[in-house]
Amino acid sequence: MKLHLNKPGIRALGVAESFRQGQRASVLAGVVMRSDFVIDGAALGRTKVGGDDATRSIVALFRGLHRNDVNVILVSGAILSLYNIVDVDALSARTGVPAICLTYKETAGIESSIRRHFPEGADEKLEAYRRLGVRARVKLKTGSVVFVRTAGLGGEAKGVLDAFTLQGSVPEPVRVAKLLARAAMAAAPGSMTRQ
Image (cartoon, rainbow, N blue to C red; front, side):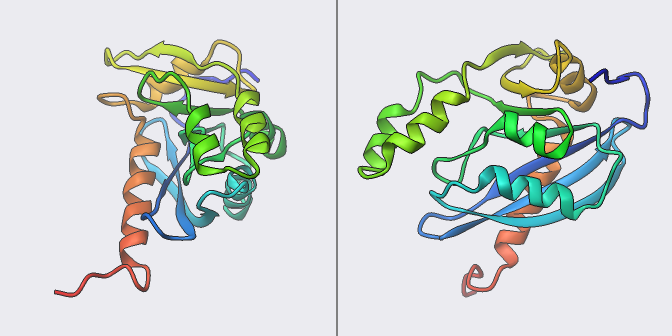
């Protein structure tokens, strides 16, 4: 799909999550933002901590917005909620929209952690993790480096990320989605601390 990155109306759905240790579900937040940084929509959802529903949950979040003008989906991470793995190819195929899963640190991989956390059923998680493939290193116009897995885009990932990143390494739709997810988590019943 060819994205016209010079148009101010290009829209990204930024997706991020928030959860606390010991919880069974995490809050998933989505923010639709235009490339001129106008917020144009928001939605909340859930995904299971340690589960296998991350891709389905993001697709449901996208469909719940009832938007046909989202040009790209930006997901903070390819592995959410303690090893709930996003299938970036399936995400793009099921939504009909290009997708980018981005991370911010170079790592050696998480196979040993998956085996430790899932003594039974590790094979299925490991297979899903391996299907993610290798991450591509992208240097943004800000000078920061991110690591991406993409689907439905050619070499346009850098252009998309540069269009939506004002500073540092986190694109604005993802940054705002993270803020929304944290706020929703804090406001959820049982999350409040006594004063």
